[in-house]
Length: 459
Image 1 (cartoon, rainbow, N blue to C red):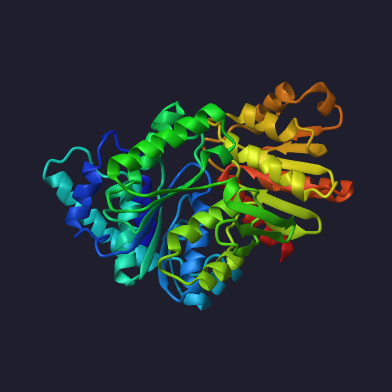
Image 2 (image 1 turned 45 degrees about the vertical axis):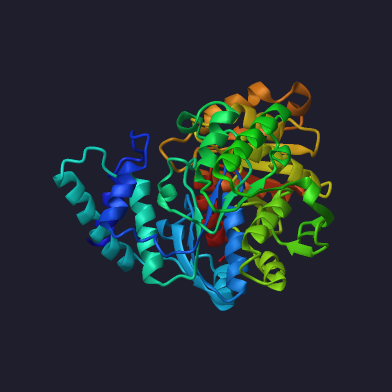
């Protein structure tokens, strides 16, 4: 396969399987020699924060000198981002300077995909009807690559859910980590918190410790928090595995500004600093620290957390004007964004640029971010995400006009600009003219496009 053929093969594969088991990916894995066997894996599921936790964990392990395979989704700018290998502190620092460092190269993708496609053909020839999904293929690509590169550890982020996720083909991970629960992908995972948490808890395995984000800190209702906690606790009791909850009570915030935050872990007294700005980041950092504790030193943990970067999560794209990019694309993410902006705005007004998918609860998300008294919003520009599932700019503008209160609407300039490049230019000009912070949020597809455009403007 050449690279165009590899990507076309993936794109023509269905997104999801109708089979409510892992049978298809297990069969594919068997025909490929179960490439995940022998890998030492940290497995991460959850609604919000998986990527941040995976970055903390990878930075901690690399700081300790290990070679780490890192599997994430979705990608921001390039498909290759999803699969990378970083060896030790030096390669980790290369990634921190250039987020393309360590990515799987096109030639390797093509070579391994040719092998995977032959395995799929053999399944079809044997009369198997439920053939692998796109995510099944990408997950096998990652496992084969990590095995070839002889990774000492693998940080494995689930794609959607957990129980039926392609990554859940693995057995006996070193740790299972459950990030903050929330409402997303309800068409696949169910419409209740019990359904959703049941799916996330499906990654829990016998003999594997579990580290979980305390639902009480997840910006969901108290009722949902109780249900989420009960559901995961029941699963861990069933599997007879230890469960550690990490939430607000496990840390004390010491400082928080635009340069980052410092906090003290209550149990150990250890003080950590992180460059990541979200109010939830101390919990994500402590989840990674707890999972890695048996494999690295306390100093490796401290330095790894301090070094961690993760694109498009309250990422600073510019200091003048001050531009923040955040991938908040669900209700809980938007609530966390509001809390973070309330700390970071330093009495400056806010200009927003947003684009969202049509299948998201964008009306409530816009209400949370735009109709609040926690900061002064002076302008909002709505644009179209570079994806066929995008809501139009006019649709988002109409939704905002419905949900923003008359009091806030009088001071909020709102407009629709479908071309996201033009929308970004206008938003930057508005932020400069009003001495405002520009906050770009919504779909990660928009985040990837904006990051690329901002580099072009700064060069």
